[in-house]
Each structure stands twice: as C-alpha cells, then as structure tokens.
Length: 181
View (cartoon, rainbow, N blue to C red):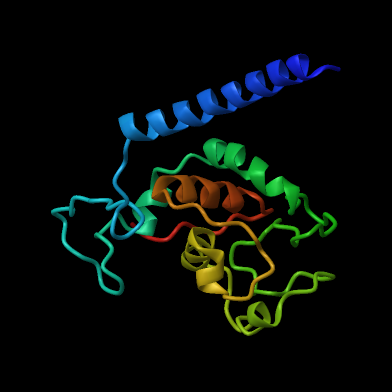
C-alpha cells in the first residue's frame, strides 16, 4: 500500500472521528441540562380532609368490617392467583415455599404442620390469624414480621385486601363470621 492510499484511509477515519465528536459537543450545547443540587424529584401529595388516624399519620379509612361487608370473594380469588407461586389453597394441601392457606382465618400463627417458620414468625405463635392480623400482614408482611420468609411486598389498596380476605374466609368447612362494621 502506497502512502497516498494510507493517507486517504487515515483522513477518512480522522474526518469521521471529528464529525462524531463535533456532533456530540453540538448536542451538549443545544440540549444543556442543569445538574440539580439534590438528585430526585419532589412528589407533592394533597392531604385528605378526613383527618389523621392514630399511629403514623395515615388518613382515616373505612373500618375493616365495613370493607369486608362489601368485599367480593370472586375478585379475591382472582388476586390469589399471584399467591399460588408459594401457597396452596386446598384442604390438606402440601406446603410449598409458603404454608397451605386452607382455613387460615383464626388459625394460630406459625402453626401449620410441616412448615418451617422463621423465628420472628414463631414469636407470634400465641396470636391467631384474625381478620385484623391478616389485613396488617397482607398490607406489609415485613412490617408485621420483620424477618419473615415471605418476600411479597404487600397489597396497599384497602378494597383489594378486603376482597382477598373475603376469599380466604371461604377456604374453610365452616367460614368464620365477619367482624362488625
């Protein structure tokens, strides 16, 4: 290869590099964004006029009994499909990653045969899975039992939790009565 051909290739390469870097600098000049002092976004939330409930600044909501009175077990069954990855809902069903949830309402916590519960869950073994306890646990499992084996993040919508609780109530030979509204 003679020097003339080499110079053509080198010139083409250097010209292309100059155009690419030049366009990059031109882009920075045209589309300049200021760096914020603190990274992130401010999310403004309007306060509800219903006031604040005791214990944490949450707004007052309907009671669990009221939510359960208008809950739809069919919608809860549809939601429970996500739970099937770790739980079964059959009477006498085998444990999976989580325990069988048949007749879970009013069952003592951490009591299902053959399932290895975490020590934190076992510390609640004197309590029962009341509607209130189930509601609290399903809202935020790690908030109820900090070192639970359950990796589910929780259900934040009140009516969605009530629907699921209404479905769990039906998983029994003798469903437990709903709490008063």
